[in-house]
Structures are given as structure tokens and as C-alpha cells.
Amino acid sequence: MAAISHIIRRIVPKSFKVLNHIPSLREARRHAMLAGESVGFVPTMGALHKGHLALINQAVRDNRHVYVSIYVNPTQFGVNEDLRSYPKTLQSDLKKLERLNAYYLKDDSIGQITAVFTPKTRDMYPGLEPSSEIDGPGSFVTITPLSSILEGTSRPVFFRGVATVCMKLFNIVQPDTVYFGQKDIQQTYVIRRMVNDFHINTRVRIVPTVREKDGLAMSSRNVHLGQRRRKVATVLIHALRAVRTAFINGRTKRDDLLAAAHGIFEEELEKQKALSPQERSWFEVDYISLADPLSLNELDDVDPQHGAVLSGAIKMLPIEESQDGEDTGAGGGTTIVRLIDNLRLEPTTSSF
Picture 1 (cartoon, helix red, strand yellow):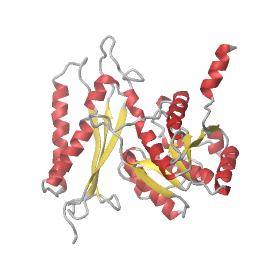
Picture 2: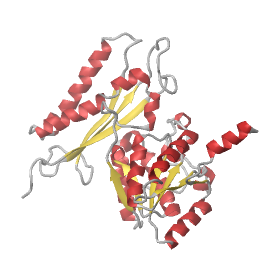
Picture 3: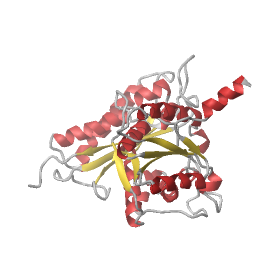
Picture 4: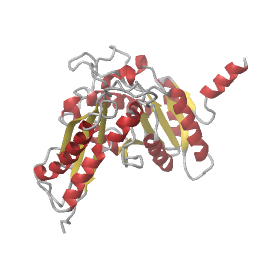
């Protein structure tokens, strides 16, 4: 019995409600509205890391109540993407939120987490079973052409799934402000377009990317990397920073700028080529984009007065041979880990 009590105490946080059903969440929101208290919303798929916590930190400074959702949305995974391999860590996520809330409760000048929403797929998709087929049945939100470029080229149903689940969550929560990270920069464009086009009464706030000390953008997928692939994964941010340096130094032509990135990729691939199968880590470049900061349309020449959005994606390939006792990450180093990142090329001249 003692062991069971311990489990119950561990599962049920004391400082916020864990709500599994839509009516319960709506009732909590109704009380906040009647009290005239603001609600900030941080939608997540769990496997919480410091990037998520940065969103929550901003939300509690802006709002009396912060609601966090933890829901792994099946419709943003393609038919060839393994939904099952996505990390599901609800208990450790709740512990992290409980510890975080302990700090918020000590400061009367900020808000706190008051609800964590953990819905079931049968409630989020009450009609047809959700489909990941491009032409599959179901009720979806599609934001074009933003959803079909860059990430959308490699993952054609991804943003349809993101827009659909966010529309559902926004309708359920009705937040005053919703928080997203800059790391998923195309997603922020899609969400802002959706909010504007459908007249959704919420404000979208973007929080800067949180990085490891060596520059790697924090992501729930990083747990799959392991030590070897983790070390090589920084090649993406190094490539993006090389482009930014070239831009600051006066280069504006697309070919000249992207050559700086490709040079970094080629150099790293040569290093890996010289290593044995038990030491090396292969990767593939999915894309590098140099886009207009308003439309995300590709640029041939960057206007120094406007700058650009520089983004990219790489695939860390499965390791060929593991060493005894090697940290190969979740999944044993057998899965492809797709990483994305971006930087803004800030204007270097003034229009005045």
C-alpha cells in the first residue's frame, strides 16, 4: 500500500490541475475569464526541455494563469514517420512543471501554471480517425503556400497537422496569448497566418531559441542522438553562422552566401570519411533556405535593409557500428534524427 501511495503522490501534482477532458479545461478557463484574469497557453508534445521552460517562463510573466498542453499529435507525422518513436515522458514532464511552479509560487509579481491539459486522441479528433495520408479523410486546416515550402517539401502533411491541432487547442483553451519558440520558425509563420486569416482572438508571441553551450538548438528529438551523433549535429548551426558572417562581411548574393554553409558541411563530411565505422557519424543535408523575412519566399539577393531568414535541416543517419558501452541515445542509434535550425540575418543598413 505504501508503494501505491507513493506512486499516486508522484503522479498527481499539488500546484496545478492535470485535466484530461475538454469540458474540465473549458470550465477552468471560464472561471479565469469571469475573474478577469489572463491565460497564457504553451502547447507542447511533451519531452519537455529548457526550450519549453523558456516559453513557460515568458508566459508566467505575461499572464495570471498559464496552461500547458502535453499531447503527441498524430496528424503531423507522415505515413513513413515513426510516431511510436517520439519520446513520451508524461511523468517526468509533470515533475519538471511541478518544480518550476514551486519557484513561481514564491513570486507574487508573476503568474503560475494552473492547468496541464493532457487530452486523448479520441477527444481531439472526435469524428473520423485521424489520417496521415496526403489525401486522407478528416477535417483539416491547411495554410498554403506556407505549408508546402521548406519543411513542407520533406514533410507534406506536417503543417496541416500542426495547424489543425493548434486550431483545435485554441478553440478549446481560448488563450489571451499563445507561446512558440523561434527554433520552429516556419511553424511560427504558419500559426500567425492562421490566427490572422481566421480572426482568432489570441496573440502569438515568439520566444528566442534556447541552445546548448555548443550552439545546438534544444529539441525533444536530441535524446535520440547519443554522444557520437550529438557531437556532429552542431554542423548545422556552424553552417548557418558561417552564412551570417558572410552576410555581415558584405555578401548578399544567394550563391555566395550559401557557399559558406556548404563549405562547412563538406569539411565535416570529409572529417567523418576519414574515421572508422565505429567512430564516424554520417549526416545528409535536407535543405538550406535563404528567405524573405515577410513571406519566406526564397531570395536570390538579400536586401541589406531587410535582411533574411536563414534556415536549414539535416538528417543524422543511423550509426554504422556501435562501440561497447557507447551512449547511442534513445533507440540505440538506429533511427534517423532530423534536426532543424534557423538564424535571422538582421539588416545591416538603415532605410533612413
